[in-house]
Image (cartoon, rainbow, N blue to C red; front, top):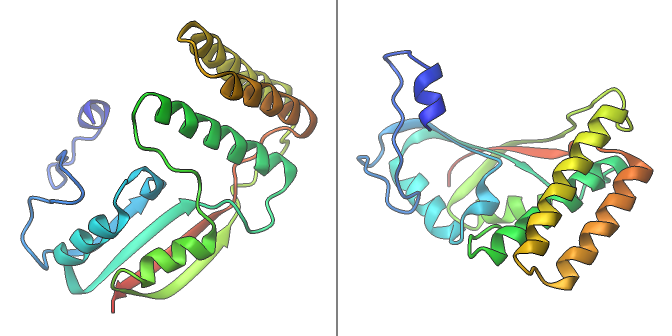
Length: 189
């Protein structure tokens, strides 16, 4: 948030850190709420969506953009999912909640089972020209290898370290491409 405050100076916009389950805003205040690639970081999604519903105006929109783990991901896109799940495991070892990537069906169900109706949805790619680009693969490989070394120093479980090797082999074979995402636009039911 500090970086955002430094780089974004529009006086009409303010940044506020708060608990997503207990927002410090009046009911029916906002015309739009976005949750961008973070739903899987909330431990109690029903409470988060209930609070979003509370502060959202009756005619307002809830917009969720989230990476999904299904939808026919290519092998290069599966690299992204594998890496993401690996970092989720790392967060869990450090007692930080970080769930694995959800399927698009699970995401739709979370929205509809928590008081919203979906009015639009779209699955889309973040296409990159060359998933096997040497610099791209080298950068991901380096990040993963450096993180593995720190995990070893902190005596991470062998299962976590073995998973690292599997990811590196997959990355070398298939490259990396951002996973498909789902965009959901919903309103209060």
